[in-house]
Image (cartoon, rainbow, N blue to C red; front, side, top):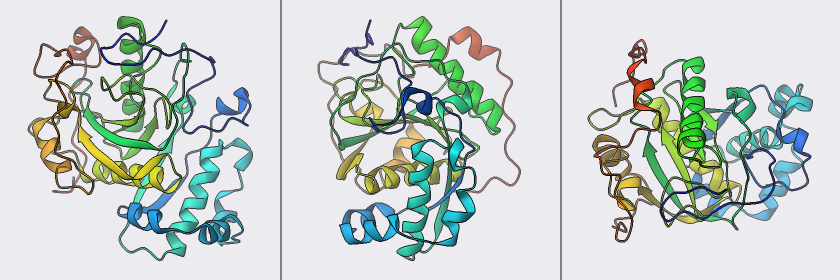
Length: 306
């Protein structure tokens, strides 16, 4: 049974866990293996450099003996293929001598306790669109355990209440600055009608109608997009959209939408025609009753002003 969301593509196929990237050679058990999250140093504007990278530079990275590779590869047996790719990107960032490096860390599905998807179907990449969302509910989370729970709550609501195959988004980003694997790259989502089979959907956990997400969330989103471009999962000429541009909703919230409107690749379009409205200014992604039981999040100490 596929995702029943207006404009989405019904999914069918293997029941292996949704993965961060399309690596057919991996065993199912390898896909489900938890790996210790590694710190990823990459430039927020790496997308431009990645688009200009040559195959010779990429080969150099694969053959690199940079000490950072050795430093972080000691537990490589517990890492998914993405973990190894992250190491190569770390080397790429240093090789290009990018300034003002950002910081991002990724957690796999097994790290946050994801349930297996009902089915998975991939689309041919690279994705020409990146679509930004906010969750509205659950509220912003600042600790990793709380953000893990938010991911589980969203998956529960999408799978159990709506009958979808999996959590609707490709990735989630918490107020802790961590990136959480959802359906992953090149996997058909359930987050944006008419765009589910050609986009990467990124949800910034929280309600961003009147407040701007903290800097670590925005940086993580930029780094994730740059990573997707570098690895070929996102088209270097991608179009960046807010959810409201493809569906009648306030998502991703007015404040966040104003922010992403200033990012590279943002595209002014309105493609909501023929798409059913959410019938609400915002759309919760957990059961409303569960949301009322949440403890209001504590603001992080010395939160950066952006």
